[in-house]
Length: 312
Ligand SMILES: [Zn+2]
Image 1: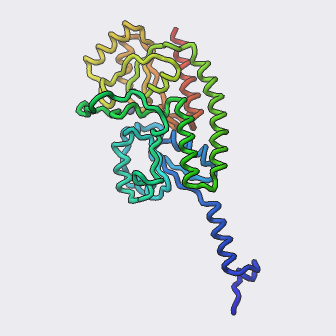
Image 2: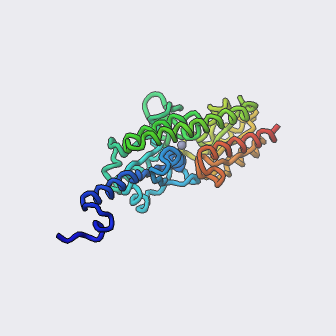
Image 3: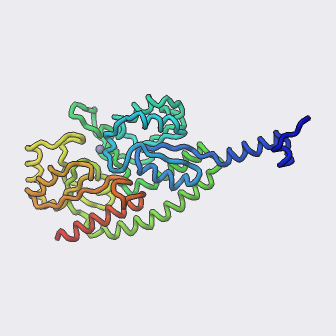
């Protein structure tokens, strides 16, 4: 019986050689994780390390309520082992289209490859009573911008580590060890951010959209109103007049908005009230300095403390 060149080289039977090759492949197989935001991608990378590949469907400088469901994104979802999204209808305008177009049963709702990360946190601003979408409210299930609440990061990371472990049990130890290392680092920074933000507790703030509610709550700042009369709806002149009266009456010194919104309405309001406008990245990747979760909160705390310190 002829002996193959590989058998001669390794001195192994073909079956053995195959087992070794397959074994190597199993050990090195990476989970292909697709996320809707760079915030989630950053956390998956931290936990998954070398055992995952991660790709985000949106960029940090995009409004995640309104992403275009392009065919190239369907191809990305088609290849995913796991799709993780922010949920609470943040991506309702585009993610269902991508999932349908991608034809990847692994990421269908109810499958292990479909993870709604909002299940890890306690939502705020959940509308009471019957839902009325006639006003175009894009927060019909509560505020979906929980990535900006530093206290939400821990439960998010725990859920990601648990889910990666479920899909790839061989690396559970590494996922959980990465998780713990990150949480320790993050908690130390959170203590520092709390100390730096402490002087501004009770500070009154108006925001463009309800992007910052979790962030403001974390640092004890007081949300007074939004330029949008309802999430997703442009401000009207009468609404802006009422808001400027409220801001003057309550001495609101800061207008906070995501940096992807046009600032003409905020500037108009600033002109009528003397408040300062801060346009900040509402997620990882929103500016180059906010390259990961810690970088994002660092940047936000730096900008806000700087603005308010110069505001006295
Ligand atoms: Zn929103």
